[in-house]
Length: 100
Image (cartoon, rainbow, N blue to C red; front, top):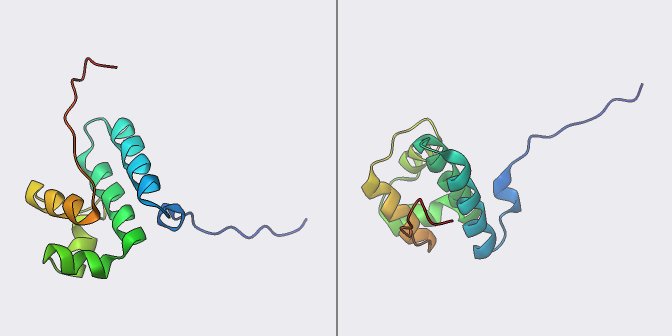
């Protein structure tokens, strides 16, 4: 039987455009429910796709702290989330949970 070589999937490699990134985050927001770590990790994936070094410069936060905060293991403050979304060019919108 032939060996099959598998590689680890990295969503960041497939987020090429701003539209890709927004659609990815929207899908993650729908899937996450109340899992804040899932959203933080999704933002981390988008940040890696855009470039973590540039994001660190634009937010004024350390690259290492961003990696940790947006890993899904960290617990970023809402202020950090706002800085990151702003630097990524992503706007957060409120919508009634009852509107479908």
